Image 1 (cartoon, rainbow, N blue to C red):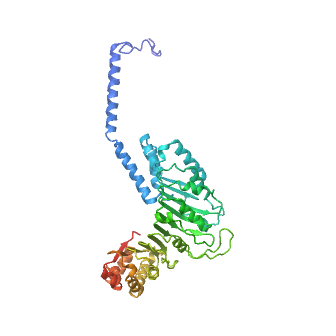
Image 2: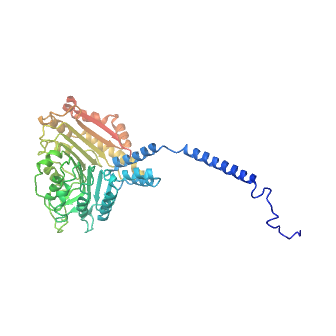
Image 3: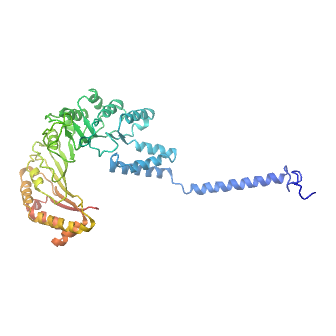
Length: 457
């Protein structure tokens, strides 16, 4: 055979014939050994796979932390992103994650309301998942429409769409939040309030950055929810001078908890409707006067932009909580002025909290700013006569029902501020010692409780 001639296919015979039994046997042996190796590999992988029950517990933990901390706010999006990632792992994770994602629903436009309605019609098992609903003008609840120059800041129309389209389809909804909207006259269909009365499971209503045109709109909203227990208001305002309208008796029987927060103002420079300057009085005081039947009241204020609040009409007040955010030092003047207006003899607990805001200073000036603040705080506490006035007020007949330790004064400050105060006064218990010394009658009755909390900032 010539050297440059390639051998034919017939001459390139395999050592085993094509139909030889040894070839079949060797192929069978190879395929079986390969299959055994793969099965062993799969078993090895399965050994490291978490049980489905444990995976569901992890998903439940993510959802619980998100719902308890954020309550469905758009700012708390980390837990939602985590659940969305879990939803794309497998079918079992998808069902569990989507159920939790529907517990807290945010609706920023009418398209989202319609989409939610269609989805709940197609997947009726998700109807029972919805517990918290937020209806806002934008994806960020920090938007304050009445402070911006945007003229298209109504947004209440999608609330009417939500009421009409999802009536009797949310059996477990407990909390409803309306944020960043202006409630204009005629912006909702008159039948919306009748449909809203079908949401009998709603016990908490949150109104954040909401401006009402008339008081009747606010009262009708409260009256439409038959089992409302808690009302949370943050920066709720009126665009016109509100009239004092009574709340229906059925609303008075159920609504017993009022929460006020934000920045209270006594005037609005320009009306949202006609641009005229108007005087409307304190918005918080209007809310307090309308809801004078509540038995529990929580107020979060920012000093020194507030004045005292009048609680003389709250004859059923049993619990009072006041939280002040301050930058200079704790002021007890507003506390004494507010307590002097109380006429309820059912009051059992009073909680006053001072939260110190961060000092805006450069790092090089941080020590000097801390030293100045600590000296000002100690000087203000040592020469404060308002604590004696508070002690005298608490000895009145209206405060005879206060339980032991029922008057709590809590202050939250930075650890470096507390350390500097301890250096100046020579005592780690300066806050407790000063209050006990200046309020001897309350301390003797055992109703005074002093708490100092160090912030992480």
